[in-house]
Length: 67
Image (cartoon, rainbow, N blue to C red; front, top):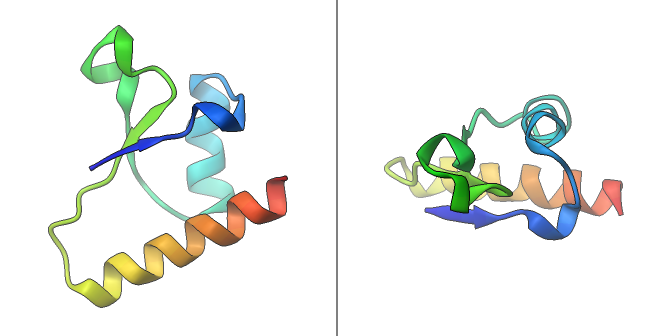
């Protein structure tokens, strides 16, 4: 699934670092799939529901702490 992260106002490197260091998530950078996907991150949702729920909680906590 594609996560639209443009409202975080980060460049590609800052967004990558944020996801790894703050959210603890290893996602694919959208721009590697095409220029139009700059500001997006790709999340593989092919995992147990509990894993996806934990990832979404981590992401929410990181975004909330960043704003």
